[in-house]
Length: 82
Image (cartoon, rainbow, N blue to C red):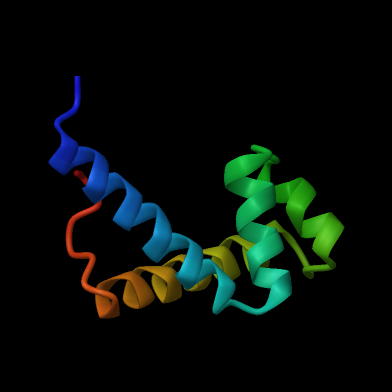
């Protein structure tokens, strides 16, 4: 099982991620949700969100993930493994 310290670290990580996601524009938040929570393929996300093509959507998602990583690093998260 996990130690109490691990559980606190996981809770802090989720809190930091929630805060980082909330800082995103709603379209970007939706994109992350569709891809990682709902597991939609990038081509379907591209159509749903009106990107020119899946490559454009993929590039945008990569930018969003970089933004999230920077936000997490600013909040003190350096390592995503508890």
